[in-house]
Length: 528
Ligand code: FAD
Image (cartoon, rainbow, N blue to C red; front, side, top):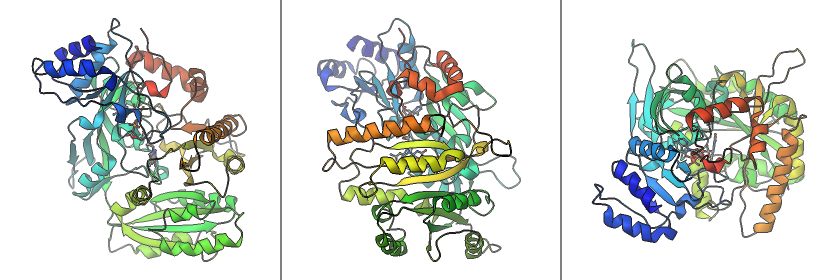
């Protein structure tokens, strides 16, 4: 390893490596040589932070952590490692490390900390009369919260979000990036104009839908398999000042989903739509800071604790223009809905606070020591035709009283997704009228497990139950697909991709033929 790292250092501008504790000898050696290679270089004596993620149940220690100073450092590393005579070392980009199953880890390999690239966010505002769009050019390791803060300075904002903003641009674009705006604008990967990518071969390539298009579409939703995103051009629009945020409650699943589908059919009025299952008081407490009034609904829950309720959450942007009265818009929308009489609540918040709402929950959980604990999360895309069966299966597989964490359910529209990206959605089914089903639900089972009451054996049992749910839901009856998921073997990955497997393999052989990248996904083996 020492030899390898020295060659790398000699080849590149001075790279920063953090060495694993097991290589303290080589670390010292490198430290003493740093000036020879153009130092000074920072070496930290631990790689342990790169072996932890938000899931907190898979911990793979890398041999080294690279802190690149520029995309060139990444290109140098990858072109060196992709030469067939080098050792079988793998490489994982790490954004914010908010994966669940070790997807940004590299056992005995090299983790690249994307946040060490110089952070840059350049906003281009389209002027009146100017052709073209407003956009932001951002580096791959930047967090979405930083993008929001910078673009808002010019009254602009990205269109499509994730619920939580302390995730990196490269990390969410490698998956899809979905939230309550997805029904209207598509996922984040549908809102990118260009990328700069270092392929597994070490080539630094600028790509877009018209230039190196195959790489562009491969990388979007590509699970980090084809290249490392070092820069992205994100589409922007005018930001609203305020948001009217509304919750309505249901005791019937069919009525809940019918109303959700009605809401996504009104994109001219509705700007955001999600929903969740109300299993117990905990389902509401986490967001009660924003919605104090809905605590009334807890009294309703106490009337029959075995009953399951559902909550729709929708929002309308308020641009403060004189022509639109936002309260009238909310009234117009809610008059069409069939929620439980009187159980409707609304608040007005700033656009920034609305988008950053999960941060409030994070702070509250952190203060109680409940943030840095295991999160065996499961996210699935479920065809509309199977959503009722999936909900029944899910409720059978969890304990209503003990479940801690939200269970999100909301619909998306398939035609807002670019078919050429690497994302896998359920195969469309024909409806009664013979048309293809356009609606797909996302279900996020976002469970937190406090080790104080659920230790190793309990956690294992929970994961077994989860695997059973995935197995049944993935079968022909429901036809669901995992999102952000982990498959236990390459054969299962093949099954996950279905008819798209051939394209995925072909892209891998073209852009990362040595199988260097993102080993934590467990899809391909390192070649060599
Ligand atoms: P990492 O965990 O660091 O990396 C994820 C994968 O991407 C790894 O395979 C890694 O190697 C690869 N990767 C990282 N950076 C790059 C890069 N620059 N180029 C190429 N590959 C790269 N997702 C949603 O879609 N919607 C949500 O609402 C949502 N909410 C979330 C809320 C919380 C609290 C958490 C913890 C996660 C949430 N996620 C959500 C999931 C999140 O989008 C993914 O886990 C995402 O990968 C996290 O980004 P990251 O920067 O932490 O990525």
